[in-house]
Length: 151
Figure 1 (cartoon, one colour):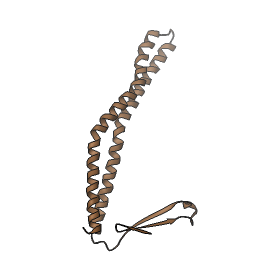
Figure 2 (cartoon, rainbow, N blue to C red):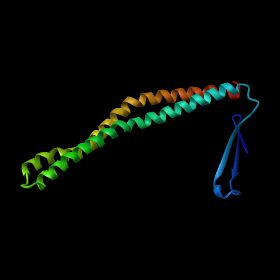
Figure 3 (cartoon, helix red, strand yellow):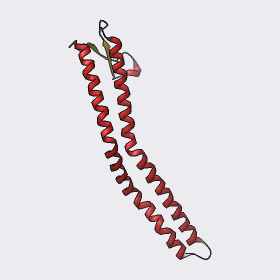
């Protein structure tokens, strides 16, 4: 058992239970005599909310570019299907096949490059927001540390 900033950390091996074979359970318990327990709980909830927002912003970096790339790929596939139907028609429409194949191939090639470009743009737009959230988390942790240590 170790003590860390008002929290007791208990390490135990779950060898008695078959479902926890080889797993370690960590229980973090705060000292019950903490004066500002409600304020610490509020800070902890704010911390968890900021972490959730950061996770959401990280996912947002790639969500729009992914949707755009997949849509472009589907449109390219539709053009390729039209090209295939044009060449298999009776009589074969070779000129129509070529005309439809060009945007089809472009619809398969360009999504990768658009995806990379869009991710760079989204990252440049979202990174400052994520940094603000990290700054807020830092301030929350400082307040919590002051409450725990009484400084």
